[in-house]
Image (cartoon, rainbow, N blue to C red; front, top):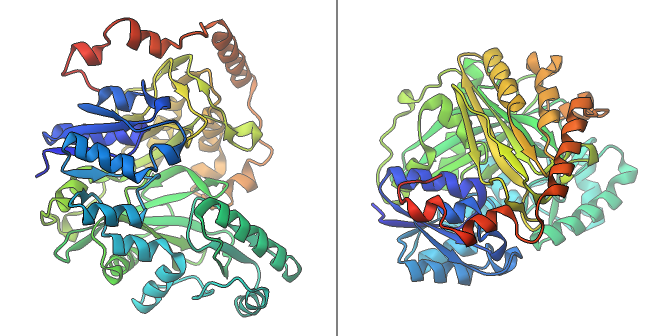
Length: 494
């Protein structure tokens, strides 16, 4: 087993990985940019290494500096978390070449599955159902038109090399196709360095359902049930739950078997997620494989009782997966809400700034994976996620009630968050009845506006921030003028 793991990430996921490392008796090394010098993940690690300016290309995306930090600290392995270098095949390959264990799938698998066209071909060959559409990417308007004629409208344009909604367009009419393809290609090139796109059939009123998988290096693969991820804004998830209200035993088993088949077809090792689109008739189609730990992994942990990070580390260390499919079972219902520093009134635009006050929810069945603290300056350079609020209860109805109670007690002042928006989603009749399709927000929340209480809190946040000292942020004062608890008590960890 490893003695020391470097976590090549930041924020709540870095803190979460550290917790498992600590339980396993493994030293955790943090890396941090200048903007994150006083961030919780840097302060709570056993060691912390500065890796450059706030700009991601000079810090968290800089392979040379990450590898140098591994050498400097003598770490045995690197856990990439999610985002940044987590699905970068070149980084995984470099770790392999330099004798550093990469806690994730092999570089070859990341590269193949990271290209959505290649992944579609692998799944098609492996007998996994795929959405009707192109099996070859193209940059020629004539090829786009021919593929569209064969697939039919409406259709979806997607970037072959990326995700997160970048380079994605829905096209309803042939007249809009060429310009939409050109715009999607430009956006994909800017986001991923590749403008390659492809077309597939758009399935309206669909659900986004994913299956968690674990695979060891000896060919043993299991799935850990599903997660419903249909509540999305700009094609990015904001609420996830398990189990899905749309699945029944036969369908659940079929999707789980398809996910295992997908993993085996790709030669997958470690933790991953096979994502599917589920149509109203119960037909499901392969969407993509996320070759990393997912943001929403805690809800799977809550219902199965399994620590996915521990399993990742054990598999990376060469241990067999001591878990059979028959042993996997879910208990109760879990929901996750992503808490971002963003403004739902302005199309969820980022809302960076200093957190003037933070009160986290607590209580039975409540888990808050948080990467910030009061006084912390939320940077503009990174994804604005602050925390992931997770609840677990005996039933879906009780889980919804518990999440509403937890959100109502969650206070973040100084930056905007979607907490009030999330509360209204959870309280809505369509959500409570399980009608959670991917067009949920556009259909039911398009005219949303905060109530008076939310506006009052926003004004209070603005006033608190205006009255706070500006010269030296509170977090820095605590760190620079006197020893903090992380310096004086070695056993105190976040």
